[in-house]
Amino acid sequence: MKTIYLVRHGHVDNPRDIFYDGDFPLSELGARQMLRVAQDMRRNGVKPKRVLSSPYLRTRESAQILSSVMGSEVEYDDRLVEWQVGEWFGKDLNAFRAHVGYDRKPFKPNTEGIESFDSMAERIASVVRELVDELADGESALVVGHREPSVSGILRLRGATDWKDIPLLDLPRGAAWKLDFDSNGTLLEAGKAYDHSNPNDPRALR
Image 1 (spheres, rainbow, N blue to C red):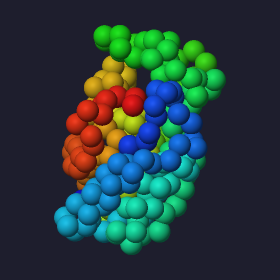
Image 2: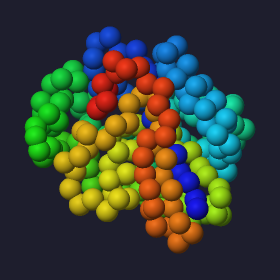
Image 3: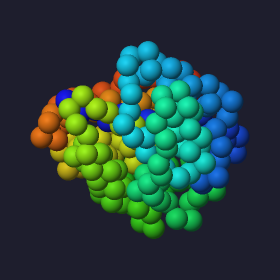
């Protein structure tokens, strides 16, 4: 069996409640969350062959904390960046949610002017597939990224053809999902494995 851990970066201070860009650092809480995730993984015997991260500041810092505890050097991959929302970076998050229709049930997103879920899902899934092909049985890797790209990738790897469950998958800041694959690269099981998020932290978007 081969294992990929999809880790969402830790908490970020965002008092203006905007769709933050790539320059936002982890808060002190976020750094503590990542340290706890890393310590839990180490206690459970996780020894990743590779640690890949989005190049955004909050994910770089998260990956460095994980790496410092578990020993693997961090590599950066542009496919792991945040949902590309164009002119919405730096703007009010609630206005963005309304524009996309994020709270509509069932979720049918308006992606006018922003990256489609299909594009986002495929770039994350492609990273995971490449890692799985490279790993030997019994090996693992960490992928440190952002919520919407990560959950869309999970749905793609599960074979989903629509995105109505994007707002529902539980991947808060400071948490990880574990994806187990067989030797042929077939996804066997996927579920949340580590969670040191703030109980009051929203599960979707921010």
